[in-house]
Length: 554
Image (cartoon, rainbow, N blue to C red):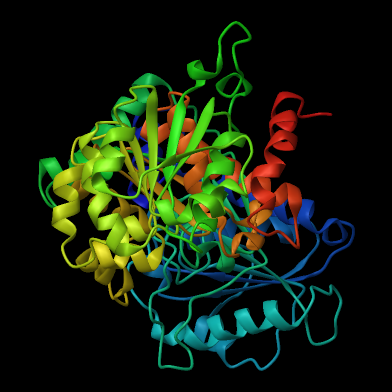
């Protein structure tokens, strides 16, 4: 897994490195500027082969300082470079001020640049506002609109008479909250959006805003460049203390600081092959027995998708629990998956007397009324359980009744946006509200708060799926950039995900690990299949994905 940082965490790491004597702020700024130029030439090799025209927009903070370094390096490369400053040079931070003075050329005002009607460059560097932005920037609304229009409507074309520039953002496109990926309002209805880029270059680690909400779309392509920060145990401890000193008094007390600031979120990465191997010396029950409850007649498809996913991911046995009226329908559709009658509370309780059943899934196609009756029975059995779809909606009128059942259990809730809003309406409202000050409330904040309230793991679905445990552990399974999988927007894909997680629970994975691994495999299956994907294809791609994990070079 890769750590993914908030702005405060990144600042603390940098400050700790400076205070330890490992590096100076000026050295970090120089390395950042060089990293951007290097990334530009890697992305567009033609720009490194001959001098071109660049416009560098510098802001009033250290992001602007990075911009002055970039401008100087490009000029040394032989480029024709124009620099424009948003703000007052006399108020620049010390390191940014040094690089301002090192720039050997004219510095125009942003007002000068704003009067232009054409781009007049081959490269536009957005070094206006980086990770520290906490508000809207109304004077920049028109620029941000033009950036988005340029990216959406034109290809990068060096040497174009009017300018078809490559737009490169330093750290994060200006106007995007680096902790949430949300854009602050930057003007009236027409110019309300944040900046955008073809390429975003950040440093040391990705930030939450690069993968959440609108962030990935605004960033274009994300490149993470090293600035030479070596994270020793001593430096990590110093960074924690630095963050504590800076934040605890300003935020909301020691307990809140510990839960929200100290814990670092991670992206779900390549899983280890050993996690999914089966021991050749054991039998099917050693890999668990999953029970998945279906809906009534004509409503069994979603549960059958989940069951297929659970079986393919390695559960030793999978049984569908169905109402009597659906038995014939299901029996005609399944082979390796077994069948038991579990239409009523009494029937389910009887089925659960089999202690070999160690993982349950309720919700896909189940029906709201049936789910409301059977969820309490299932959770009372004390098995690892996935609640999805109707099993969540069934408690929309009284979410606390559900949380009374889930607190302290081995349960995973897997809501999409609508289901999340039904169970956590106040949290969803905070996430939906237009941010006026930063750091803006993020999907990570929302999922962590939901998991703490429900007392179990919550997987909040989307291209930026966030998974959180009640203790604040959190990860992001982002299907963005090169991992984008838009084909998952198809009926039944969420049912298969519920089945994947259930199968992993049956195999003995913890709820958090099952959710993370299932979500990662779900995206990999979609990417392996590609366009034309339907939900039935997802389980059938697992063998190929497993082989690629075992033999990545094959």
